[in-house]
Length: 246
Image 1 (tube, rainbow, N blue to C red):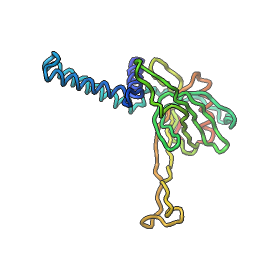
Image 2: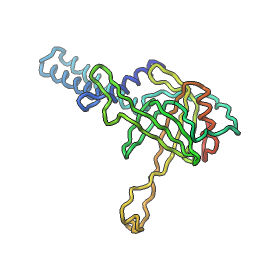
Image 3: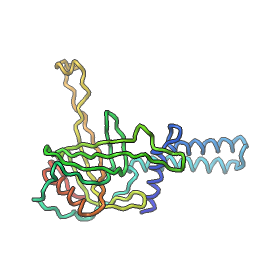
Image 4: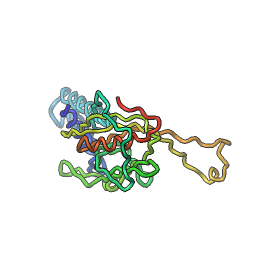
């Protein structure tokens, strides 16, 4: 299983590190096509077998990246039994910040990006809205692949307890690391973009716009079982239409 985790992390690094404004996995695909073309015009040896091998490698790269992206580059193994939870457990104080790692869809200033295992702080406010505040640090791989500058900095995820639909405890594997984790299903109503007509009540076609529903999966991973239990009890304190467990 850890081998799969390493392969997923390799695909993650190749997709998220760029060279000349393009991800490294795209450059690898381009290089494979170029090599196949050079073989086809006999500038390189290999013949039909070489072209076939390049085609197979290209297909493997495309399929592997597609699968890795859908998995958000992590493996989550759900635990067979739910964790015991104190029904009278205390919620986090709004001033508390708990360090963890987060995988999911982040936002900042109208931009949205999916990130994997970002170091973040978890906070719960008096309104029972939760905030995940993460930072994308500068990073490089293979000497010339760098994380894009426009993604470096603070990113956020916000959700309310009433928007939680499922929480599953388990173990998360990313690369060679294995950490206690929670897989969280969130369902949020996203208000439609408003126009001046909407503000004054003049809805187009005489109908008020309905909010869009965004469903997403978040993964929270922790250094220890104790830290996971602390966040789990906070989330379960008053969590609406929630299903707990696998």
